[in-house]
Length: 276
Image 1 (spheres, rainbow, N blue to C red):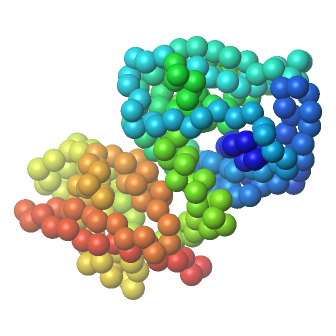
Image 2 (cartoon, rainbow, N blue to C red; image 1 turned 90 degrees about the vertical axis):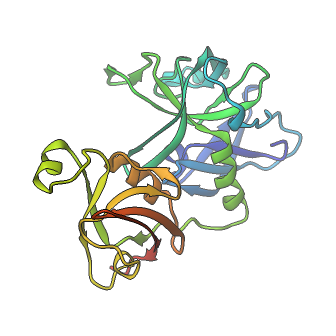
Image 3 (tube, rainbow, N blue to C red; image 1 turned 120 degrees about the vertical axis):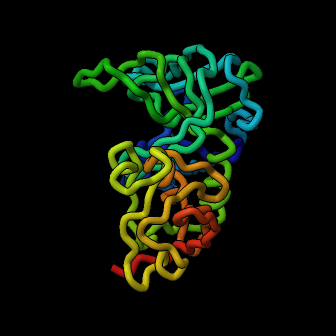
């Protein structure tokens, strides 16, 4: 924003003791970390001043597969050469891609083939109108060296609407309390497990353990229940559960649609603060 708020990834600046922001005219500013959330991988910084140049945040719900994308960033530290960002162009390759990585939840990510490499993290992904539609964050790469990973055309950006929600909370001084427990263990269902348990399905996730006096126990969940949906999101694999559950905060209630034997039912699971 023009008054000095800056967005980047938590994995870029979230744990930094000192942050220096370099403008494209070479000016340097000490930045304060307003807040950071590890799970969504979003950090909010602030520099003092006014009338800074900035780019407009767009609407990632309007993103269309196949539309043009423009990525800005600092791959391999090239920004240090002349204080200018590297610009690459591609298209939206896919959207709504969700996965977890190192306790972070990357939900509904925008996939692009615009070249994104090590050093691009925290930079914007723009549409053809110059509006930010995402924050460049993760790449899948087979090209690796001591300097980092290079682009093979598979990069992922956090959708800007998800970024906005996190920023609004951080700007208001609210901490996203992720220190919760569900009180249950789950595993994916494969053909072998389905045969062993005489299940009529070989996909989905089954609850293997429910701990005494835990949120799962209080919700009326039992070992052997098959989770079909969480908050309306269809569950096919264990990763689907990790994405939806680990994105929660303490006190949040999740609507689990489960199958128990031949019966299907809803259970409300409250994410309670971890005591140990």
